[in-house]
Image 1 (cartoon, rainbow, N blue to C red):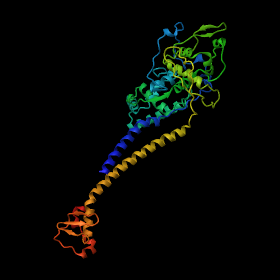
Image 2 (cartoon, helix red, strand yellow; image 1 turned 90 degrees about the vertical axis):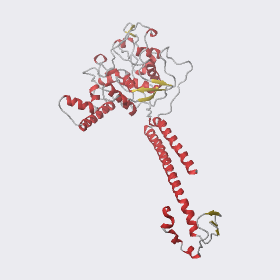
Image 3 (spheres, rainbow, N blue to C red; image 1 turned 45 degrees about the horizontal axis):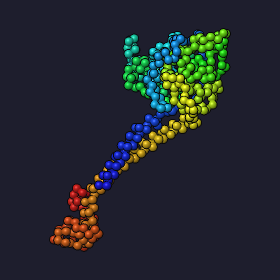
Image 4 (tube, rainbow, N blue to C red; image 1 turned 135 degrees about the horizontal axis):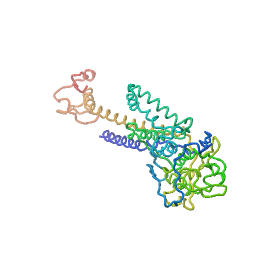
Length: 440
């Protein structure tokens, strides 16, 4: 009875541990990338390419400068969802923030300077490779197509991490962000079954601002540099990211990014449209994240930037109003970023401990069952052996034999049968198979 209760309890414990692993695994596996400041020259500066001679970072929308902010329609919010200080991003959101500024909404780019990403992504599908080769009369086996698809996928991931001749590196994206982004690229390119493989990532508002700044803003704006005046702006100077928070307010930057805004330019300063395109696909909340990120993580011109000094403790601006934080609001500071190796070690150690605990509980349940079954089968055999091995010390009482140790009557030996003392000297004679039958 006690064994059955223990087994039932351990069953419940195993179920509870399984649920705990299911709930906690995403948190343990979630790789929280440490936010760092943007650094170095702009990508156009790196290529020594003038703004007027490139399609990079241009959406080809300049907006209208005559409408007031309240008269303009709010931009699309994308697929992201926000809860407190975290934001759930889909692959489409990561594409908007990192890729759409150059490759466009459909991924076709602006050839010949900016190549399409559709065909390189389609080359990672063995099914599409087989279809393409069959259409040109060159059939390949499934194994050959899978090998080619694997090579194309490796090349795509290397391009994302290392960049290319005209493409910047996206090495600041972690593995989970890359997986979600590539899943959306497959969907955009029409890879079969891509819709079932979409993935989401949970990010902080600071991380959202970092992604937009490092991929979209840093294309044209250097991290650090002088603060140009109206005449320099008219001559083609582009303000550095370090000066943006001193040049404009949060509300002004939100409007500048999402719907466009005038800027004072010229030898005789006048309110002109300027050259910065409108990033209509970014939301006002995401634009506010950009401003807060630049405040909390001041841009650096050095190769090894200082550790970021703060994180966003203030709720990002909503899609209406000025977007400024309430009076008296204080920013909460994050602790020093942890070493990624330590985070990885802790993550897999925790999963290993949970796995060992689950395996131990399963083993214990099985042992309880085995021992309970074995004890149940051997109980009649032990009782029978005690009486038969020591028959001379058990006084006869009519039809019962009473064992002295426990003083309990056991119906085994009829009273009319006389026991001899010599039988106790030969206990091995009572181990014959015919005496116990199936009990042995």
